[in-house]
Length: 122
Picture 1 (cartoon, rainbow, N blue to C red):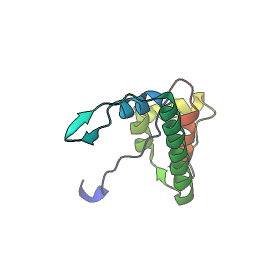
Picture 2 (picture 1 turned 180 degrees about the vertical axis):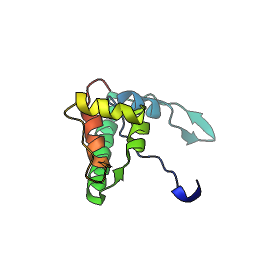
Picture 3 (picture 1 turned 90 degrees about the vertical axis):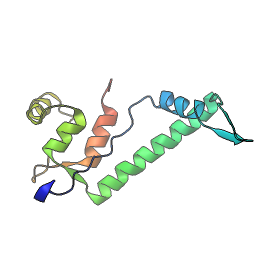
Picture 4 (picture 1 turned 60 degrees about the vertical axis):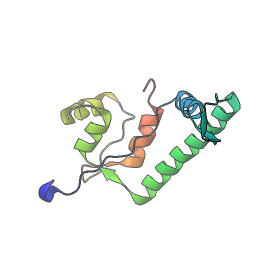
């Protein structure tokens, strides 16, 4: 990386609905009983409980990001969204709900996570 510093990836909020992810995890969890592995299908109640827990954890991450003021650069936001840096300018013009960068040219991660979670069809 040279003198530019250490590269890191930014946490990305889970996309909705989270039930398929939870169902996959529960379906493939392992129970150890006499060295045998068993797959147990998830019940709707288990899926609902884990979905609530995922939502609570997502909110907690948003709160922590907001409190700590984690900020991301234009390039980091572009990488997160899977677009070119210059495309962000077009997106800012089209989407009034998209968070705006601060005076330092960086976005508050908590605002980005909230915006991502509120985007329809994403």
